[in-house]
Image 1: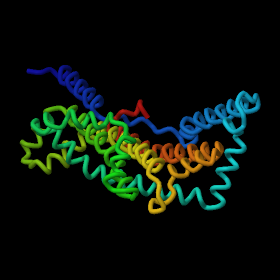
Image 2: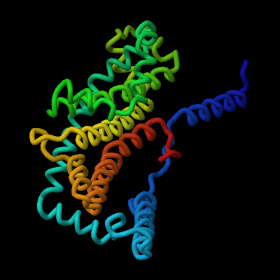
Image 3: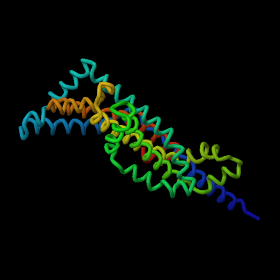
Image 4: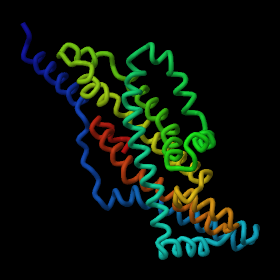
Length: 292
């Protein structure tokens, strides 16, 4: 017969195990502290970069046509903003990238699940998908032009070929890391294949899937820039890649760096506004607050 002391000890052990399993409920830092922790370090790094840039320009190690001053690059950016050209090229490129990325997600998600759960499919195309992920996206541009011409179809084809392998491989990696117990519980509860994929596999594989989505977006953006730089025609309009190409054709280094700045701005903006909040929500839901 168990003694009251033993019962209390067992209850304490059970409570301790429950506390270990439960997500941490640490108090979130104030808005001011979060701003200081997340916004100030990048601003300081950017200020240091500008200082080094200004110092190298003032030292005149390179001629002006190779290294312009920060002021001249900012003047190029301001002129593009005032004329409305910056908004036009940003809209042209960003909406293409978003449409291509969303299409890639719709294609890569079922493909990743198929490769992860069907051994024959993985043996057949798993290594091919990994090879496609390592293939530079720019290699698809000449083929796309020959197949589709200098049309938007070429742009979207290159974006898909650059992003689908990354998203699918990220999902495969996430599914491979799921504890075997979870799918068995789903089967025991009567979940079919579609229900198990929706309610068990995808949520459990979410960290790896999210990493694949982030990499897929990066590949989408890089692929789009490569396609816009090489495939040029009036039918395509002027995107950021074409804007960069025009600056190179005119030997206008300020315009080239302004285009690079806008391309980088979009990449950083999507990371901070879309993927960073998603990543924090996933980590917080799993109690991994130390990584936030």
